[in-house]
Every structure is written in structure tokens, then in C-alpha cells.
Image 1 (tube, rainbow, N blue to C red):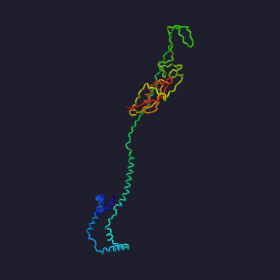
Image 2 (image 1 turned 180 degrees about the vertical axis):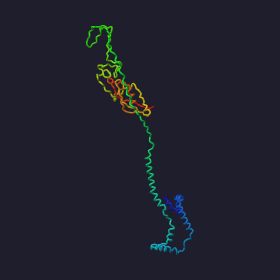
Image 3 (image 1 turned 90 degrees about the horizontal axis):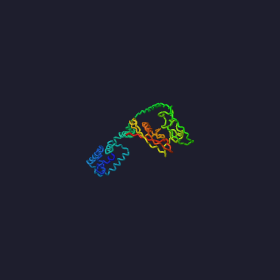
Image 4 (image 1 turned 135 degrees about the horizontal axis):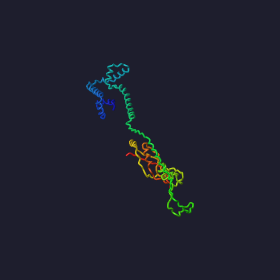
Length: 332
């Protein structure tokens, strides 16, 4: 309840006519408001003075002429008769109205209060936006990868073996066995000694670089590059891609990749996916990185190049094949 409304109840409280519901609230307000206590004391003082004053005149003529005197006073007021200052002071002595004393201070404090509330509201909005919190620490590892050293030069070719110029002088057995073109005929007599063949000086002891094991100088009629029997002379078959019905070959020999020390220190791990190409013997001849992790790519390539697979047989003939290989690097 507001102060003004409680102040209006002071007169009823002094006369004992205040409702029981409002009485505790007014008494609590009187304990905290010295101005209302002064008003209550003033009302009680006036009541005490009224009780102590002498009673009014009891003359009947006085009260009979009272309305006439009131009308005469009102007529004098309408006629503009000046009232004496003493009469005005006496008239306003019984007034309980007191003007507000803090009007000017309230008029100054109201805009200041609005400005203060606006400043607090702006601070509550801006402070969370300005506070970024603690940013995570980023550790940068600078890695310098040097190119691999060049491969060593190939060893010098071995010295050619001298051709054998001397052949065993063995007397040849002359037989007059009948022969037919395109047909083998058993000899009539078995020779006691067989003449030794003359060795050619074209071959090189230990083979030559890039040669095929078991190959023949100049090739074999009906053979293909790589020495695959049943091929076509000069034909180079393209590798088959392992997709759909063509399954990747079975791994026969696997070499675990060597974890690079710089990747171990940088705590780098993951999966490197490469595309491998095998020859007709199942050996890896080409590796291409499909999914890269820079610190782990070379280790994956070096390991896959040493793997060996079962040869891919298609239509009864071995074929090179292209397929994808997944190499997983995980720190233990």
C-alpha cells in the first residue's frame, strides 16, 4: 500500500474507526515513517485540546442566528471583502495538507535512474560477447622432409666368358637311316659317344640387368614379353582392374610398414589408401597414393612394394591387376 493511502488512514486510526485488516499494516508503517508519526501525534493533540476546551454556548438564540451569520459571511466573501491575514492563518491551521518536499530531487534522480539502468543493460549484453574464454593451445610441428637419396649405381657387368673354340673331336657315326619330313625316326644304331655342342659367345655370365630368369637371348618363338607361355609375339596386355566380379588377389607375403619417427613424435596416425599394380607373377610393380597422410605416405609405399600376391589367372592365363590397398598406422 502506498504512503499517501496509508497517510489518509491515520485519522481513522486515531479515532479508533480503522478496520482490523488495515490496522497491523498501518502500525508497521508508523514504526518506519517519522512523518506519519508526527501527523498522528498532531491529531491526538488536537483531540486532547478539543476535549479540554470549554463547551460552546448553549444559548438558543445563538444557534438560531447561526445560519444567518453564515449567510452574511458568504455574502461578504462574494462582495470582495478582504479577509484579514489573521483570519486566513486561523483558517488554514486545521489543514492537514503538506506539499511534497522532495519533488525537485525526484525530478533530477528519475532521468539518472533511467540512464543507469540502460548502462547496466548494455553491459549485461556486451560483456558475454567480449569475453572469448580460453582458446585451445595449438602445437605446431615443423617437419622437414628431405628427398630420398638417389639409388646406387648399378654394378658393372661381369666379364664375358670366352667362347670355347675347341670342340671335342669325336668321330661322328654316319648312318643311313631313312628319314621323313615332319616325322621322328628311331636310329638304327646307338652311338657310343655324343659330340659336345659348341657354346655361343653371345651369353653373359650371371645374366644382364633387366633380363628374365630362365629367358633366352632373342626370345622364344611364340613367347611374349615376360616369358609367359601361350602368348602372342610382341603383345603387352593391360592390367585388369579389380572391380565388380574381379576380386583383388590373395596376399601371400606381407611386410609391415616402418612407422616414421617424425610421425611418431607428432602423434600422427590414420589410414593411407594406395592403388597397387601387380605383374603376372603377383609382384607389386607400381604404387599410387589415393588417400594421403603426408608423414606416412612414403612408409606405406615402401611397405606395399615388398608385398607379393597370388597371380591373377583369367581365361587360363596370368594377367596383371590393379586394386586398392589400405595401410593402417596406429600408435601403440
